[in-house]
Amino acid sequence: MGLDAYGMIGVKTITRTDEDTGEEYTVYDQENEFYWRKHSRLQTFMEKLWVEKTGRPDVELNCNHLILNEADIEQLEKAMLRGYAENICEGGFFYGHQFQEEAVQEYEETDHQFVTAAREALAEGKQVAYMCWW
Image 1 (cartoon, rainbow, N blue to C red):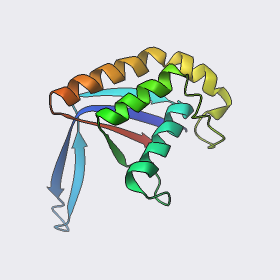
Image 2: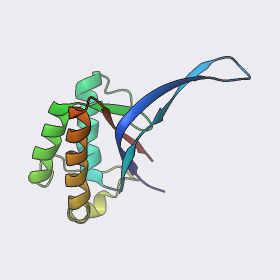
Image 3: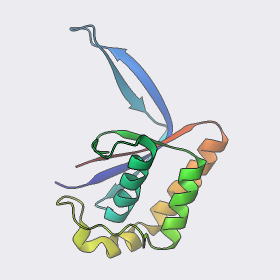
Image 4: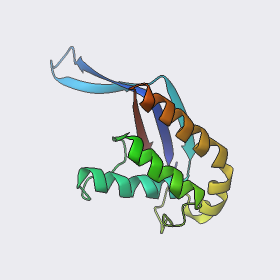
């Protein structure tokens, strides 16, 4: 068990209807996906951004999609270049906070690849999102 996080490029929101109940629900599809396992500082960054964008500190980011724009990606890149120094994870049982410095180093290349892909997708008018699950 633990924190699994996904960077989703070219996100499409699809509304479907449950055949049994007739209720509508939303699913997400993407063209490309990035994956991080227990990258607690990235998670801390995204949780702060989630609260900033939604104004809802009472709603967890867990299993929700955070749609990212160009300004968000710019902020993310700045945080990455500083080793997420402002995003120290203070806990979170499933986050892997015990080895967060190692995760920053381990995922450095993936983080940069995600930022590059996100910028390209946004320039093409596509959606970019972050989603986590623990």
